[in-house]
Amino acid sequence: MKIIQTVEVRQRLTEKSKQQLMQQFTTQKQQLEQQCEQLIFEQKRMEKQTSFSQKQIKEKFGREMQIRRQKIAELDFLLEQLRILPIGSEIKEREVEAIIDVHIGARWSPPKTIVIEDGIVVDIREG
Image (tube, rainbow, N blue to C red; front, side, top):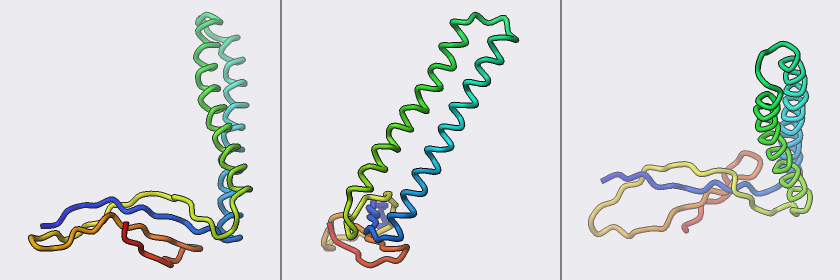
């Protein structure tokens, strides 16, 4: 019998991967900030051109801005944590699913963890 099992993928930080993650988070943050600026522009434009009440427009755009500001705060937190983490630390990158064979009499093994370093698998751990 074949079953699907979740496998955790962890990234071991190197100077290169740390810089890549910082760049990725910074780019995401900049995109969100640009979206906020665009929302402010759109809000002002709608306030001048529509029959919706000012309150409805402010609420709608306020919710959208809040979502983006929350994501920006999360990215700021991640950037700060990344600055603190020493080289060699392992961080959870994602989870993937693997197909494993299970049969009567087989030893049950706990889920595996795959460790990558600069895009190369360097370790596969049991449980």
